Image 1 (cartoon, rainbow, N blue to C red):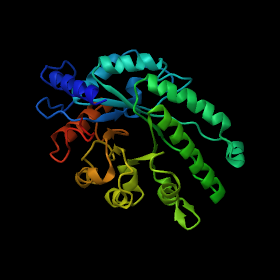
Image 2: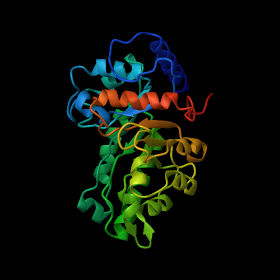
Image 3: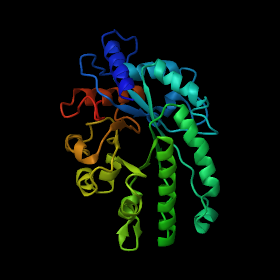
Image 4: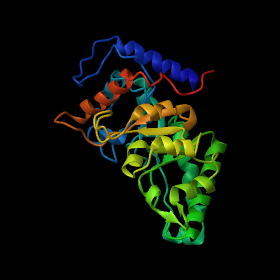
Length: 307
């Protein structure tokens, strides 16, 4: 993985020296190259719907690379495919553009019957196939993007057991398993605990990391930095996010979040952007976010351990 990282950064650096024919705003070729992925949900109107790539996906991937993105995180896994193509083809498409197929938002929800019976039998069969597909796609992380909050403590225990079981299976396969936070985990209670604290206490750190969405934490009136301090080392991935383009709203102060990277256990930051704050396109918007991070002196070139 570290060798691939070197290849990605070298390719991106070489691309930065070339003139680009695309017109995305505020792309600064002079800004330093840094590892950062884009959650493809951000550009779903460009890359294609939940079932199939747009025909121009190779051009889109090349533009992301030119903006400075070095990896992607998917938001679609259906019937063993990513955006309608095989895992192998998805990996090829990413790597040909100089992008790392870093991670995926993929999961299998438990039915009401499975939840009540504490029965993961069929779910684990799904996970066997899913893990194999994500490995074939070259991904390092699988992230459950959301799961319905429990209504009883018994459901809470079952969900924690389920996450532990998934994490154990991922560990055996050599891929990391994580959970993406929203606001619900900070507002739902299980007994006398918040749901997010209950999960932290009942899911083994080695079985599941957290992908803290820093914007949604702020929306839930939580300090991302204080939460990181409360659970150090649990946040291998972060969703770096603001109301629209990074650094524009004044709602999320990214500097202390990045400065807490060692405490958080950060390995890779993933940009997610929902909409734009002006009359520009979403591709212009994600270019502006990339440029913000590339110019920010508090953002390091990489957060993964070196050889």
